[in-house]
Length: 115
Length: 113
Image (cartoon, rainbow over all chains, first blue to last red; front, top):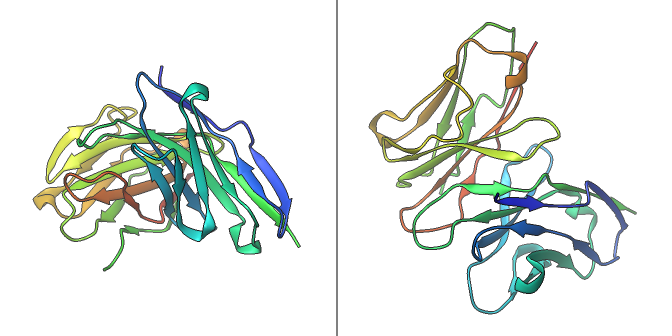
C-alpha cells in the first residue's frame, strides 16, 4: 500500500541550530515528492518538490531536501532555524507523470523553536 | 493573483445538522481538490474535480458528503447530516491543467458537537 511515514511527531530545536525532518515513503515507483508547511492559521504552503534529476532540491525559506532512492527517503533540512520556522511540516507523495493525481500525506511533524 | 479562498474559516454545528463549505480556486485553475485532516491523522484526499466533472471521488467517506462544482468555478462540499467524526480541517487546493503541485487554501475547521 502507498504510504508516507514521518516518524517524528514533534521536534524542538534551538534557534540557529540545524534541522532535519525525516520522511520515508512506500510507493510502487519513484513518486513525485513534496514538502509542505502549515503555519498557525495559514494554509499549506509548498516548500519544495522533486520530480526527477538532481536529488538535492532547493526550496523556499532556505530549506532543502534530498531524495535517496535506496532508502525511499526525502528528508528536509535547514542549516540554521529561525523562530519563524515554527510550524507543522508535511511530506507528501504524488503519482509521477504529467497527469494530476491525489497526494498522499504523512501525519506531519510539528516544529517548535526555542529562543 | 488571489489565492485559494475557503469559507467559512471555522464552523461549529450540532450533530445532525447540515454544513456547506465553499472553495474558490485560483482563477483559471481547472483542477480542484478537497482534502480533510481529522485531528491527529494524516491529511487525506477526498475528491478531485477537473472543471465541473468529478475526476476522482474515491476518498469521499460516505454518502453524507456531497461535492459540487457548478460551472467549473467555485466548489461546495456539503455534509448532511453531520456526525461527530466529521470534525476536522477541510482543505481545498487548485492547480492549472498539466502542472503538479497545488496551491492550498487555509482550510475550514469544522467542529461537530
